[in-house]
Image (tube, rainbow, N blue to C red; front, side, top):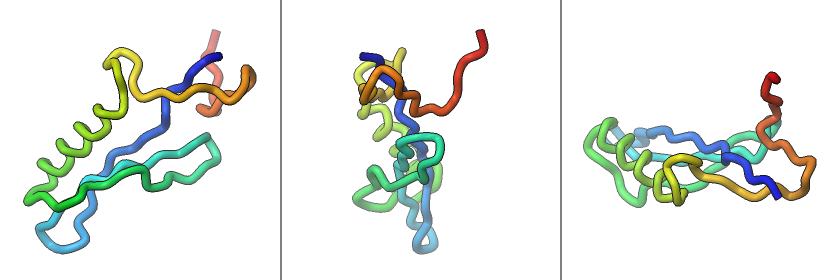
Length: 87
């Protein structure tokens, strides 16, 4: 069964001035909206620090840097990315 790269975005939110939180959002397919996957338990003092922590949280989701965070296909025909490579 094939596996697919998960569609995960890293962003930073500032709900209060000077308090930055990383947020991981995930979409299940090309027509799906991004939904909360994970977020920082506490704020950081800078955007850059929060962004670095968010990228580190994303890195913890996968086993190998060569393939990234993946999920198994539900069936042989599934293509959650919504695109087909040019051949």
